[in-house]
Amino acid sequence: MRKVYTILALLLVVVVLASGCENPDANVKTEKTLTINDITVHYSGDVSLGQAKDTIGFVQDTFQITGQTDVYLSKSGDAYTVKVTTPYGSSADIDGRTAFYVRVMASKMAQDVFDGSHVYLKLLNGDGKEIFSAESRYAYVSGSGINVWYADVGKDKAQTLLDYAVSLAGSGPWDLFLEGGNPMKVKAMSSFESPSEIGDAEGTYRQMASDLSEKLGGSVQVIVLNPEGEEIASFEG
Image 1 (cartoon, helix red, strand yellow):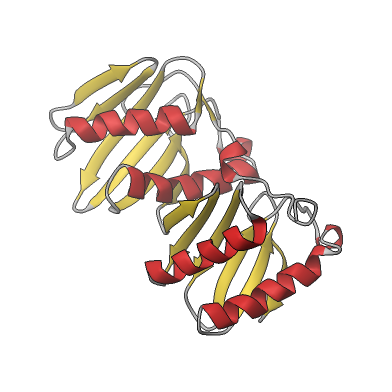
Image 2 (cartoon, rainbow, N blue to C red; image 1 turned 30 degrees about the vertical axis):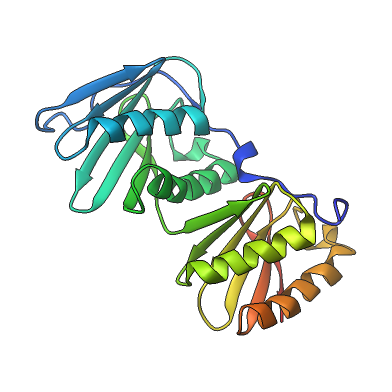
C-alpha cells in the first residue's frame, strides 16, 4: 500500500515568514499587541486575548518562522481576518504548493482557533500590501495521521470516509477532501505530478470510488490531486 500511495502531507509544505511591516490598518480602533517569541499579534475590537494567544500558537506551529513576524488580527461580524507578514514581494513569488497550503490552513485556523467561524487568511509583503488571500471552506476530522476536510456534507459522512481511508492505508500522512453534490467528490492528495505516474494505483482509485459510493450512500467521483492541489485524474464509482 505504501508503494501505491506515495502521499504528500499538506503539513510538509512550508511558508517561511519574515520581518514585519507598518500596520496595514492604521485606523484600527484601540489596537493592542501581544508578543510571544518572534511573533507579534496586533489585535483590537472584539478579538480576545485568548484568541490572540491561540493565533500566535497556530502561526508558530503551522509556519516556519525566521525573524520577527507581525500578524494583524481583526473581526467583522462573525468573520475573522488574519494578515501575516511574509518575505514574498508579490503574488508571483508564491508557488502553487504554497498557495494550496495557505487555502487549507485558512480552514484549519477557522476550526482550531475560531470555533468554526469564517476566516480570511491574507499574506502581506514587507510594505504591508496584500499579495495573497484565502478563506476558510472546510471543517475536518482526523485520525491515524489522515485528515478528511469536508464541505456541504455532514460530519458523519466525513467520519465514514476517514474510517475507510484508515482501513485502506493504515496511517498517514494523507489528506482527503469530501465535497457534497451529485456526485459527491472525494479529492485525494498524492505525490503524482501527472496522470502517467499513477500506473498501478489506478485500480485502487477505481475501487475507492466503488466502495465509497456504497458507504456514503450516493454516487462518488474520486479525484486525484497533485502536490499543488490540481486535478490530474478522476474515477467514477
